Image 1 (cartoon, one colour):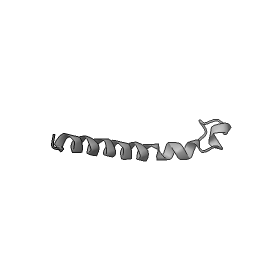
Image 2 (cartoon, helix red, strand yellow; image 1 turned 45 degrees about the horizontal axis):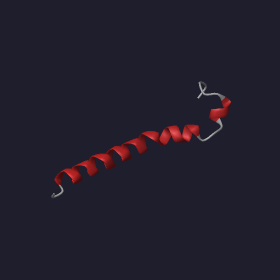
Image 3 (cartoon, helix red, strand yellow; image 1 turned 135 degrees about the vertical axis):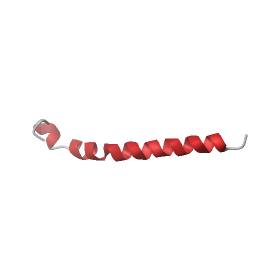
Image 4 (tube, one colour; image 1 turned 180 degrees about the vertical axis):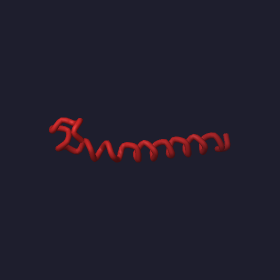
Length: 43
């Protein structure tokens, strides 16, 4: 936390940075599941 300036330390940035990997994992799962559905759907 000492690396961040006071402006970022007192904002929502640390909270967003903490949840960003979870959001990216959710997005990756949605993309992969959607790709598999399109691939196996009848033409």
